[in-house]
Length: 67
Image (cartoon, rainbow, N blue to C red):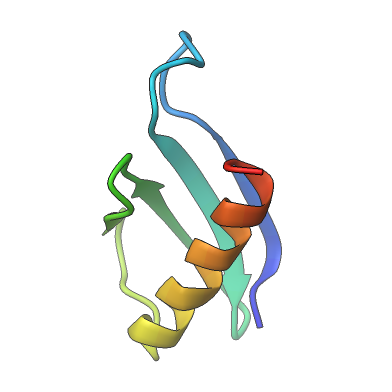
């Protein structure tokens, strides 16, 4: 489970898509960029169980951003 998930727009003009995000997973902080087409680019380490983590991020972004 992801903890303390946060995101913000990459650009000052919030009409342009793209977001940065951060969260904790297994007591380690991870950050990345969520691109407009749904691609995730990690900034630093890739979390374990990457595919499961990506699914959780996609769900959170769909709920918070695309709602």
